[in-house]
Image (tube, rainbow over all chains, first blue to last red; front, top):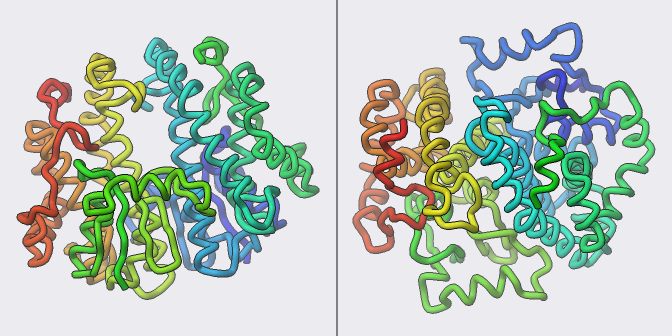
Amino acid sequence: MRYELYYWDGIQGRGEFVRLALEEAGADYVDVARGSGGEGAMLRLLDGQEVEHPPFAPPFLRAGELLIAQTANILFYLGPHLGLAPADEAGRLWAHQLQLTIADFVDEAHDTHHPIASSLYYADQRPEAKRRTGDFLKTRVPKYLGYFEKVLARNKAGDAHLVGAKLSYPDLSLFQVVAGLRYAFPKAMARLKPNYPRVIALHDRVAARPRIAAYLTSTRRLAFNEHGIFRHYPELDSAG
Amino acid sequence: MRYELYYWDGIQGRGEFVRLALEEAGADYVDVARGSGGEGAMLRLLDGQEVEHPPFAPPFLRAGELLIAQTANILFYLGPHLGLAPADEAGRLWAHQLQLTIADFVDEAHDTHHPIASSLYYADQRPEAKRRTGDFLKTRVPKYLGYFEKVLARNKAGDAHLVGAKLSYPDLSLFQVVAGLRYAFPKAMARLKPNYPRVIALHDRVAARPRIAAYLTSTRRLAFNEHGIFRHYPELDSAG
């Protein structure tokens, strides 16, 4: 099946978590808004009167008759189809639980530069951003990374993956979060790195997987920038 | 099966979304931290070294051998067991997608009074809270409520439910969000009410369901208060 991914052009954003799963699996997919359809094709599904189950926001995925939104929901659907989720119910719920915790982490990373309103510019909420980032780097990043370090350490199948003995979609998403945090907060992350060896090793192993490595150097992988979730503002990196 | 729900005592919080589903279904469940087990029983599962799949945070649910965390994940699991989710895959993904959108809305409602850090008191972030709430009431609440109004209007089975022709767990959660917003922002919500007749009607119908009505007047339903997600600070209600 050819999957259609709909997400804003120009940023990795939340679409990237879906892209990484599709890329790792070598799936047949088209990134609609970045192709000939443009963002217009995406906006018609967001705003079109005839869409019975409208998404609240991108990303969303068309898979045959299904139109699925919410990043974690898309991955929950794709996981078994792409060989990136356990076969049993307990394993699938556990993978999804981890993905939802990653989603919370991502929301908090976004709000470091937009603590007041997404509708305002960063420049209009800079003092608040500095305050929020200070807490994020001091209390939230250690809490989340410490949690995933613990999950890896307790995995009875070994600490190479979050879920069981095989790669699953939360591994790919955790890679993306670490990559994003390193882009946004290089100084703070260099300081924190020694505390989370399993998380860092997971990041490095994912980056070295053949299909992911090829993807990361392709033109399909957009660079991090100051329009996405993970933004590098040096004054925030120093807030921690 | 007797379900064990684990959540902080003293607040409705995110546990309430699970409680409403259990109550509507007349399920056999125990609210562990509010019973003889106390919060100690909950903290042992959060922090215990022997827990292979530790939750990041409450709420979590024990269902036989399963230990499931993340509110939306718990409801995804419970839905079919409690008769509160569609039977087909497309319907279940749609219900979950709506629940995840409600979860995002709830996160934003929480951050109105804690825009800088959950680890700080409200009093330590009052000016920022006023600013964030102003945007929340002006742009975010209309965006979310308008979305759910649209979902109800487009439901081919009628506008009585979010998903198909039957009550499902997102209906119960949307009731809770409307109730919470009315508690937190009575003036703003009175002003907004005429714009979302289907959402308000859904709230009223859920509140009138026999088991929910009985639950709401029972001692099991905690009152809203200024420790939970939805908090009434008059100065914030006037920020919109």
